[in-house]
Length: 205
Image: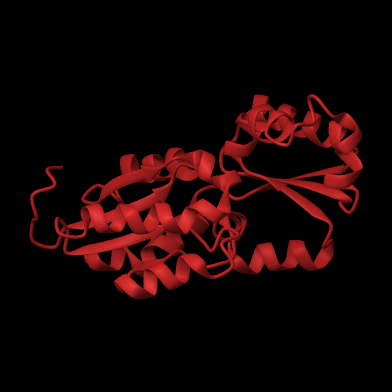
């Protein structure tokens, strides 16, 4: 889609960590008329950089679209992202982080209440576990730091957006490596679709 301003045009600025899921929704039809721009997925590990990056992206694109929506949760920004969005009059996905909107608030709350010491993985995080966790946290070089990072965790929950035996096995291996009990919870794309429908897709109707 051209970035020349069009009637009823909508831009979704999204976390690169959910790009695959958003593209799947686009192919299925719900996001067919929305322009999608994904920010660097590496921001998932650097939450202090999310709000400035989103602010820059909004400023870059706001003259070209009638509406902008941000497909992030708070994502560890401590309210900084909301302060940026309030200044621009832009909405975002609900929740504290991607685990909540991928699982749905009710399901995620139940999981968190059941075991507060839960480490969560998504399809994206399973695919990039070595880069983001082992290497990203320096555990490939300093395995002695494992108790520092994971000593308070008891369980790993894989929130699976797809049915993929290879991802299931990789998630189970990650739990074993971390010394955590493993649980798989299939989310599909329904909760993400519903969260988008509440705020974004209603604009298309």
